[in-house]
Image 1 (cartoon, rainbow, N blue to C red):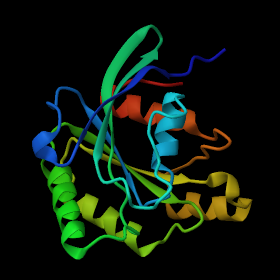
Image 2: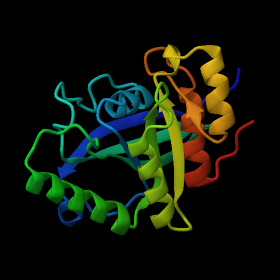
Image 3: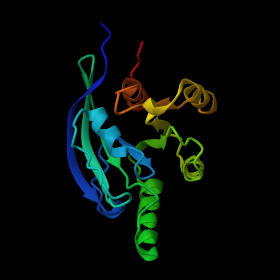
Length: 204
């Protein structure tokens, strides 16, 4: 039976408002980002197999802290430590213009200057693959990405697609992964992508 990578340790580490109060960048970081309600918290909970690890807010855009999680993978008797970083969802938040501008400034500074970030996981809703905000975010990430950083496009809610829509996504976004947290579809592929890029782990 083929061995699959799994997360054997996952715990909440701390929250930060900005890069200034973030923990020391002592491990490689995998950043999860996407529009509010795209399923960021659900994806982290599915990957870690911890139902309530990442808390999702019932009010879209309400959670505005940068949340850090201490993660350890195991694969073939080897252990791989890293951090997952859950960024606030963009869009939807009903707050003052000045508050929104501060959030944006803090997030952009973190994304641009945080040296430990190795992977940007850009989560997008599979039912709305060409959303203008997502297209803009992807172009922005391309413009700031450093040579040792990777961008992974992950489409959530893949269980809601028809086969024709899945074929379209595969053609339009050939390097993306379509997942379903609800049905645990293709979660192993995301695990493999993370370990292969960060640690050079080879999979059959």
